[in-house]
Length: 309
Image 1 (cartoon, rainbow, N blue to C red):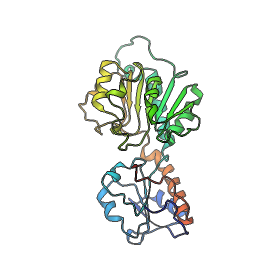
Image 2: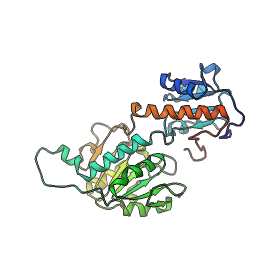
Image 3: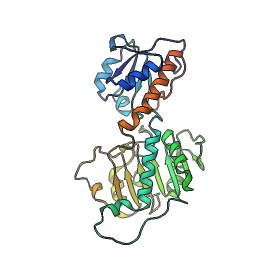
Image 4: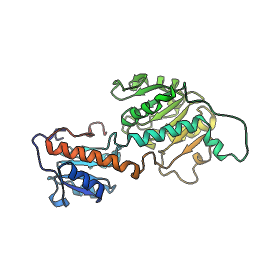
């Protein structure tokens, strides 16, 4: 794989695919120029045509910026070759995603999924978020942003990362081996981890059994992190309190899937960060990475092909 640091300063001749006035302007602000593919040495790709990108990455291409934070589609298809520097939108959409998680936590705590379906006044329910414990699995950009948003609520935060490094603002930072502790102590378990070989089906029947009976699982990452059948069984049996899902497996969730019918489930259609919300943040990342590419500096969001993220 080419160095994450480009070395000597170079000209940035960037093909933006699909075309975008916002991203093309970001390229210019970063000191690059917008060119057709046959003249490009870099690509900014926000499309999802795997084969088109595969054909587009010629020997002239030195760097590809992807518009998504999760890159499994490209990685699994073998498009991401080691002779090119690949950067993902890691952390780019942190603020929109964190706001969505906060909304889901509040909805779960105040019993809004069930109450929004009710057709009678019913009995009082819900609880305070204040004083609860929020466990964040995969505490990168979105997880760190969420910790900041939760600060006024007086919650305790457990932040788990692959590296077991210290997560800014977290009450306790954990490594992968401490997942059982996080599951056992959290009122809300938030999944913001990337989908990799190590995290596929991370939430299974075994791990769900470690959660508290009143705890909620919140997934704003990828559906493949969760064993859907095991989740349905846990929800129906009442072994966990509920689930708030912005990502599902399969996705989109079929119209007749049982998850739609459960009163302790809220589902949003992968909109924690919509294209409209995320576009300004992605433009800032493109501008900064073009500037770094031109200046021979290390790029932001470089993908480690050895782990697929």
